[in-house]
Image (cartoon, rainbow, N blue to C red; front, side, top):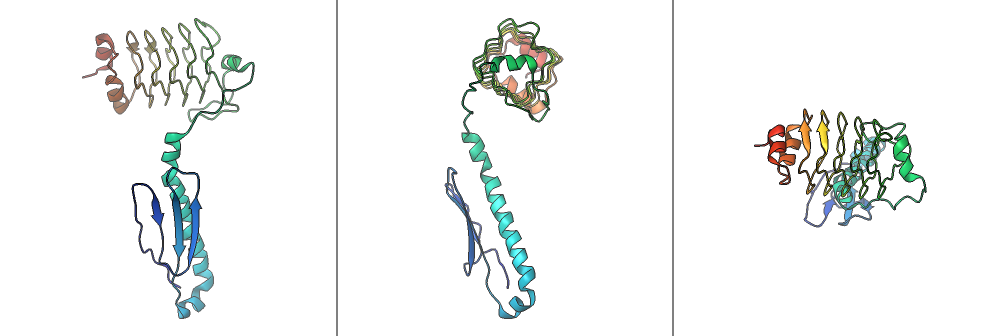
Length: 239
């Protein structure tokens, strides 16, 4: 039995993978933006079939499995791009979870329980947020104006649309945080890690960047924000 890869056609609206059409094992991947079908087939040869049936059956199954997994992986960016946030937590003490932080928070955003801080108000909070781990926290539309968030760890946090006016982020780790359309006017980023964080349409006028740790590509993206004042641009080294 011989297996051959006849074609791998790609189209704008979908992806089709198939082997030669003698006998096919098909996998349908549901719930994607574009329909996807993975088909594996094999042509038969009597002599080779008798000699290698068991071995090639295993090989065929492995190959088909790999193709199916590859198809799902290839489609995953489409899912990520269209994903929605989970419903707002109904926990009455969800805002207080910020004061406890994440007990197993790590740089990759692992957490023991989701920290949902959306719409919470921490205006001028000066003691309870400092040094907390808020890995993968949901922070959109929350208020942190004037808060002391120095030494906080916010890896993979979602803070789109949140307000951080005058917030102190000194010595904080803001790794891969989404600050899209957030208000960061007058925020203090002193010796702050900003690796992989995005500031699309964020308000940055008056923000202070001093000894900020940021990658070159991330810096170029940050410098494209037109709300940065001249002092901020000079400190960051924007050209």
